[in-house]
Length: 92
Picture 1 (tube, rainbow, N blue to C red):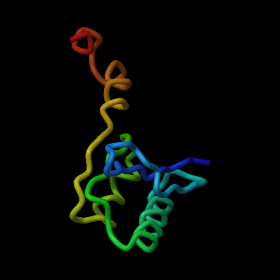
Picture 2 (picture 1 turned 135 degrees about the vertical axis):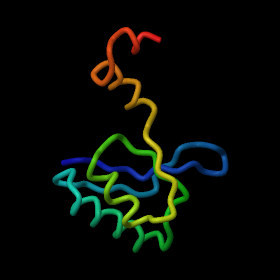
Picture 3 (picture 1 turned 45 degrees about the vertical axis):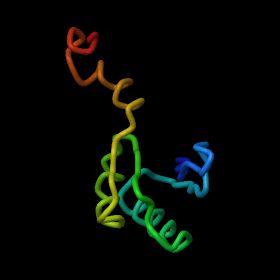
Picture 4 (picture 1 turned 90 degrees about the horizontal axis):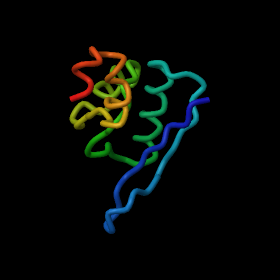
């Protein structure tokens, strides 16, 4: 199962997990279901989403949250850079 937290920043600038989901699969129907349940529970979309490079999530985010800002997590980018580009480029 995949743990999918929804984490925000409170007025003290601390990270707070305010929703979460457990998914059997990381696929388009699962994320579509999760995002729609999130909207049902919260009543509105978040201002932005920062995610890993999951292709299914990238399809569903603009579908369910058309006006949202979607960015990729820098930690995931820097950890995967050596597998995506030549080692000489990754050093710099």
